[in-house]
Amino acid sequence: MKKNDMKQQLLQLGNGAHALATQILGNTDDAADAVHDAFARVLSKPDAYDARTGGLKPWFLRVVRNGCIDQIRRRRPADNAVDELQDQAPGPDVVVEVAQRDRALQNALAKLSAGQREIIVLRDYMDLSYAEIADVQEIAQGTVMSRLHRARMALKEELTRHD
Amino acid sequence: MTKQRQVDQHIGELLSGLLDGELTQQQRQMVKLHCEGCAECSENLESLRVLRKRIGDAALSEVGEDKWREHMNDKRVETPRSIGWILFIGGLLVVAGIAVSAFLFSDEIHIGMKFLIIAIYGGLATLLYSVLRQRLIERKTDKYKDVEI
Ligand SMILES: [Zn+2]
Image 1 (cartoon, rainbow over the protein chains, first blue to last red):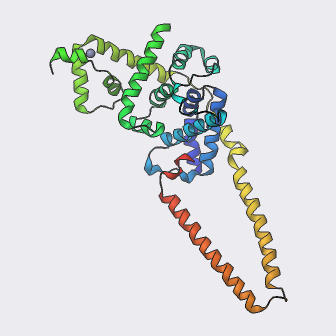
Image 2 (image 1 turned 180 degrees about the vertical axis):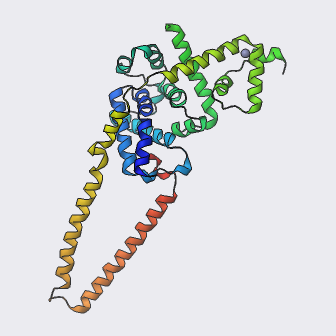
Image 3 (image 1 turned 180 degrees about the horizontal axis):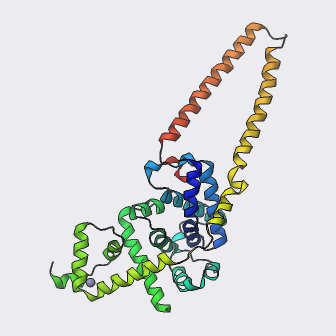
């Protein structure tokens, strides 16, 4: 893929990638760094993307996600932060920095596990297919529907509790 | 499966599958049939539909394209590695050039010895080149390898 074409497409993915990184890292500034680093990695090697293996979107989101996981590893090198990723609680700044009208949603999301927030953003915000979600999260495709449904039900529950 | 039994079991995750368009034809019909006879599941389906839209319409990130364009055009993104390599390889070439010319034009080394040493290094360079070339081909054909760059 030509570098300029890739740049154009990546621009469209910036916000979605940032939303995903925010849900993983729990902090919008760290998330912006993660997206920035992902741009740098991808654009320094645009040939690494092979269109025959799938869309640019899931591929790029996977690079972003891996970068976030590396960032968590660097942040807390002593313990198994990545194994705990699924249960990690978000930082307080996520809640503060989002727009007013989505605050209730953001609050409810913050109550879910990182893995649940992630899968909801990938499907309902980024519009990825189940196959693409499995690819990004590196989980079996057959488990996507049940994980997603559980995450949505948990989110619904949180929303009705506070609405 | 009787209707009562279907109601007992409810539809669960297939509701999400239906909304996401990820069900088979058969599953779709099964879910629709169930929802016609089950108020709980059809309400659940509707509330999930609303929830999906709410998330889709939400502003979960408000950075904006212009900001990302700045990120992309940031010099740190575009140049550091390539400049590093150019300086490194350029410097190496200059040093190697001086060494090679000093060696070739030296009067103290016998001409036969010169040929011998050229042969040894020439062979080494050929080997190195073939290894590098193979690596390059492998990298291009291995489609998953570079995902986690
Ligand atoms: Zn039901």
